[in-house]
Amino acid sequence: MSSYRGWERVRFTWGGHGLAVYPAGATFGPRTIGDYEFVWIVDGEVVWTVEGVEHAAPPGTVTLVRPGMRDGYRWDQRRDSRHGFVHFSVDLAGADCPPSASWPLLRRYGGDSVVPTLLRHLLRVIEERGPCWDELAQGAARQALLAFLAAGHTHRNGEHRKTVNAGLDYLLAVQAADGNLGGDAAVYESMYCHGMAAIALAEEETAMFQLCHRTWVLTRSPPSTSAL
Picture 1 (tube, helix red, strand yellow):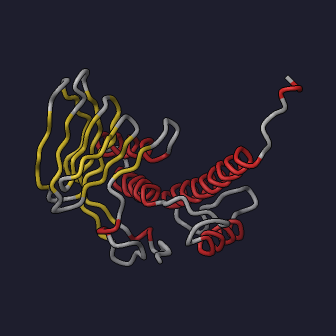
Picture 2 (cartoon, rainbow, N blue to C red):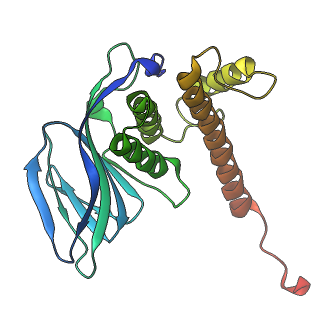
């Protein structure tokens, strides 16, 4: 079981990146990739094939292909497809996280999900290369990858509920009087630490709300027709 301790030590090296548009009916690949690549689908009903297995990739899908994998894309047959992408290498030395071979290949997100938003921000930071751009990009990529690896465990449910509960206790214990969750991190790191902690608390709240809502829907009695 991974604690994700030392996640602030994770470092990324950037490769190709950008936004791409493919016409209806186009394909890409197959190719054997030499690094990691995040791809997020913006428009188009896409089919992603990785290691010989097809996956539907509608808008909101984020894929993460790993070095040595063979993959390809079949873009929407009826309209243009649009996606963003960032190639990278990653140094995980000193970070307690699952081995990359066990990482998920894709996630399908809704319109308000944090991972596609973080990836769009990451791409903009890399392309604009403003002051301190690399440290900003490092922080955004750490948050995006960490959120991508999240598996939906809460402090009440799942195999890792004790770890989640301990993490929540820690965040609440270190929270400053003004609400800041950055701890004793330096200026730029503090901003991202606060963001990551806030995301964790928000995801926990969302997961618990969804669980309670499903339980309520499944257990409540159907409404009486006499009350209509």
